[in-house]
Amino acid sequence: MALPEQLIPFLFVVIVLTIIPGPDTALGLRNSLRGGSSAMWWTGLGVCSGLLVHATVSTLGLSAVFAASATAYAGLKLAGALYLLWLGAGTLWGVWRRRRRRSFPEAAEPLTSVGTVRAPLTRAVAFRQGVLNDLLNPKIAVLFLTLLPQFIGPEEPRVRTSFVLTFAFVAVALVWWRLTSSLVGLLHGWLTRPRVRTRLECVTGGVLLALGIRVACEAP
Image 1: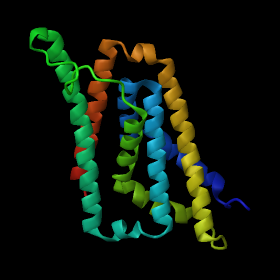
Image 2 (image 1 turned 60 degrees about the horizontal axis):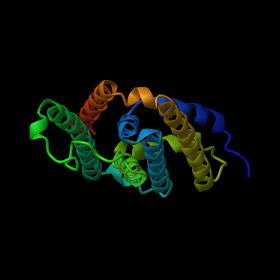
Image 3 (image 1 turned 135 degrees about the vertical axis):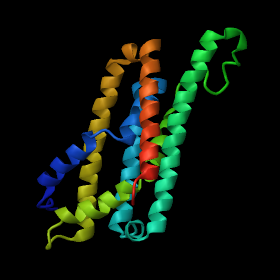
């Protein structure tokens, strides 16, 4: 099977899009603080699964519904914004509860309470969060709808070439998540220091909140 004529330029564009920090990156870093490099990797696998869904829907032409319908696009955007706000608020709430527990140990709630000492993030939860974070981002749907056709030649079969480009996109994303999660694993000892972890959680929680607010307020 011949490769798409514009595969190399497409890969260059995809690499740039992949390494630019966004909601997925913020979520991955947040999860790495609770579950280490494994949680970040499984978050990335969830994100890549979401990319596959978006690309498949785009190839079938269904993403045009979100591009053409202001109501559908606004609904998906609102759901995505609320999800980001929920993740960010939950992260900051957990930081506040830990600080309160250290300052007032006599008033601390049981260790199983939300926001205190929690079990490490499971792979299933990290994966599910990655999938939802990507599926609820309408920009990804529009991205595939507008990006893929630009790299499909007039003589190339549309569906087959779209799927080849999709797998190339996901392959780049997988490599990037593998590299970043491995780096997080190398830095695990430093990242899990109480002061460093608290600061990073404040940053990632704040970023998720800011992204949620931006998504909710930006024009379609």
